[in-house]
Every structure is written in C-alpha cells, then in structure tokens.
Amino acid sequence: MWVHACRYDQSHLWSVVTPWTLVRHYRVRATNAVGDGAWSNVVELTTPPAPPPPLSVPGIPNFRLSSGRSVNTVFPAATGGTAPYVYSVSGLPPGITFVASTRRASGRLPTVRTETDYTVTYTATDSASASDSVSLVATVVPPPPPPPPPSAPQLSGSVVRQTQSLSWTAPASTSTITRYQMQTRNSAAHSWRYTRAGSPSPSSNFSSSARSWSVTTPPGLVRHYRVRATSANGDGAWSNVVELTSN
Image (cartoon, rainbow, N blue to C red):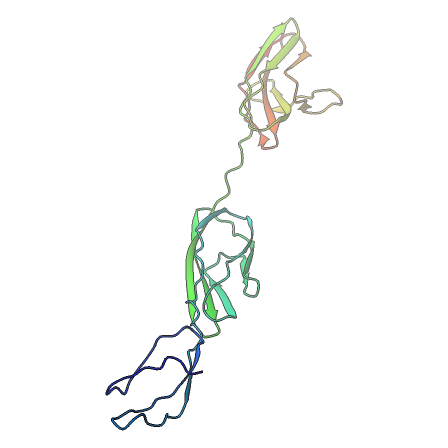
C-alpha cells in the first residue's frame, strides 16, 4: 500500500531524513487542469547502515616500576572503527616484548642506575586503515639500596688478676644478627687475629646471643680487643678498641 502521498507545486526536488537501513519505494505524477497524469517509474531507495563510531584506543595511565622487575600486562582493546584491528607498540623499555595478537607486553625491565623514562606509544589500526594512538610514560626506577649491615657494638672490658673479661652491647641492626666475631692483637704494631669462641667447637664465631667472653692470660700480658656483629646484610663495623693488661 502506498503511503505518504504529498502534493507539490512547481517543485522538482524533494528529500527526507529516514532511519538507518530503511527501504522505501517512490513514484511521482503530474497534475494539471485536465487531471492527474500517469505515475512515474518506481524508485527503491535504501538508507545505508549507520557508520561505526570512530576508532578509539582507551587511555593508559603512566606507571613507575622498579629496575629488574618482571612485567606481564595486557594493553586495552580498541573500540569503534571497523574490526578486525592490528595493534603495535613502540618505545618499550629494553627487555620487554609485545605480542600483537594478545596485546600482551612481558619481560624483565632493565637494570638502571638512575631513574629513566620511556615514552611508549600504543597504536590500533582497523581494517579500513583508520588508526588511533595513545602514549604513556613508563618510568623505571633504580632498586632501593640494600639495608645496611649492623652498626658497631660498644665494647668494654675488665681484668681480675690474670683473667681478661669482655662484654658488648647488641648494636642497631635492620635485620636479625646471626653472629659476633672478636679480634685481638698484643699491640698496635701487631696484626689483628680472630679470637676462637670455643663453643660448640673452636671457631671465630660467637653465637648471636653472646654478649661476653673471658680468657686467662699470663701476668703482664697486654691485649687489644674489638668485636663486630654480622647479619644477612653483611658484616657490621668494628667496635671501639679495648686494651687490657693482666695483673
């Protein structure tokens, strides 16, 4: 059934806005004082589908990561445009690779001595050759310095006749102290040598709970002593030097 019959005077042009994909048939006839003329040929017109929205790549925030850290991340998918899409990335830090089919970047960040910025550009291209890109700054920062070894203990000593006794305080330490070591020498001109703890077997290591040690020496013997602590972060600084002389 024909609808939308309209009458126009002296007009040879007409247009109308229709919904997307609408199909319509049109015909036209002329009228004069004698009457209506014959209808024209029929023209079928189809409004094309709505164009896709523009191709768009979601924004990606900047990030900061520690030197040497592993990376395994998926970049966001594009929207709009005409699928399928082809993805590419430029400017990635050394050691990081990008797989376009999965949009995944993975690998291990480089080791840097100073904070280093990498400008990364992520691009999507659709089947109609339209493209869109976003950029971000990837900052690789040096790893934090390792915790320091223990500080120096405070060493003190006393002599009762021929027995030289030493005691020390537990020094400040960022990790658990695992042992103490003591060194002795008979004068400033001599080289330091390790003192044997004697328990559980002769060795230069005192237990982490040790805080004192004594030794019987010949009368008149002069000795210098110093002690240090060790933790997982390394050997600490040597204590003050204590000089003891047996009676």
